[in-house]
Length: 271
Image (tube, rainbow, N blue to C red; front, top):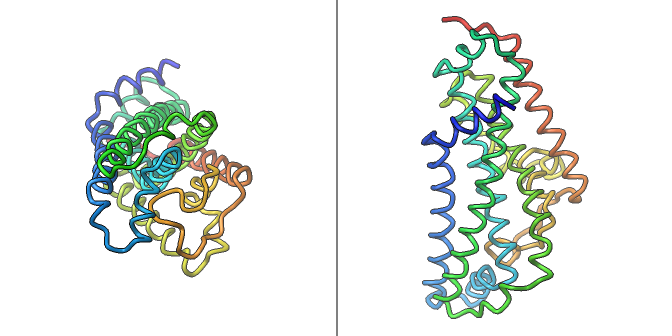
């Protein structure tokens, strides 16, 4: 617990924390406000209907969450890689070991701090997205009467919890890659490459991709088809049933943390 609290205090002051979640929230806000401001200029009627659907409550709740679980997962990976890589490049891991800390306990506590901030960032980014969707709906002249829909709001805690576990898995992936590379830049670069490689591989290996980390993280939250931007007119991508996806997410998460801990235990830390 001591290492976990110390990690939280350290990460809250880190520019990487504020930049990661600040950019995510700003990007989401810009997109929703832009959709609302330009909705009446879209010439293609189906395209306009799809754009307005993303701003119409209560569906907008799923739209915001879908955005976060998609692009937000990449930000979670980058954040995890940035924090893990800095432990090696800045020498904080070496200093902790020199004063007698357990390597495994330090790695697990460090990732625990990352996970806590990912949860906080998810909730705050979701609230920012909802406000941005409300602003966009107002600009587009869309009714916001559904914002208080009790049935939808009642499902949000479970969806956010599942989304947080998905963020943990993707953050753990970045954390592990940076740990193996012992570098922030290498970890972030390799993580981003892995993210886009998985997205493009849906074209060639659709039955395999549904078990990979980013896809299972999205699949574990039961969102309706076309819940994000767009009307769902494209080809459907095969994905696991939510509870099965949750098991896959937990397996990826535990595996990533175990690999990080084992590598750190065996690594030679000189200098």
